Length: 251
Image 1 (cartoon, rainbow, N blue to C red):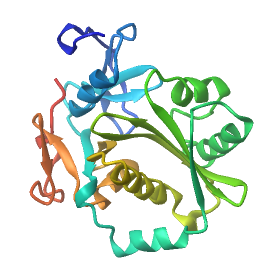
Image 2 (image 1 turned 90 degrees about the horizontal axis):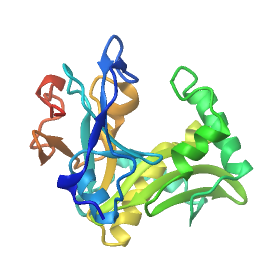
Image 3 (image 1 turned 180 degrees about the vertical axis):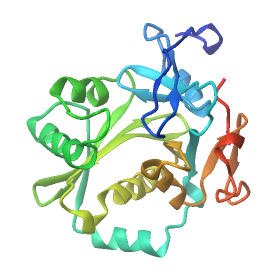
């Protein structure tokens, strides 16, 4: 397998930011032809990289450092009162882990979720090809975690298993059941699963303070952020005072 020091990286041209208005974004990708094993991927995750389909990437913006990698130390996590309510409310759901694959049932839920919840985003309109390239294609240990009520599929959390934790890749769910808080439930169940398997961390991707769709990750405490190349745990790194310009600059 390829050593990290031998990896080649490629940068995209600047493009419109998907998270912050009037911002320009740039991304670096690991050479897609590189042969990465679980150890490589795990080490890259600790450096702030994420996976999308077969691409391993990280923000590399010239004048913005708002995207900050976030992870939860699962042994220290204690659910809040509202999070405990979410768990109690969904005790009637069954959870099952399966290998990533395409099914009409998965895609129907995914398409409806994108159409209702992200109709203004760059993932809309969805397609079968997009679903497969984004979530199904993976060279790593990826699982689809299903949430069902009786036989009805309500949510799917897509996760990768790292050496030191679980990486939350994406979650899609029934948008017509807001009272169940299925997105919150998925994170809480992933934390529980990591703890049961003796894995120290749940990686949540990027926390973006001024983006409502990404700022919710700070609700799961304690949380660690990758600041200036080091993981720092809140509340030692005060999240209310943390400014995007003081966050990790992706270089």
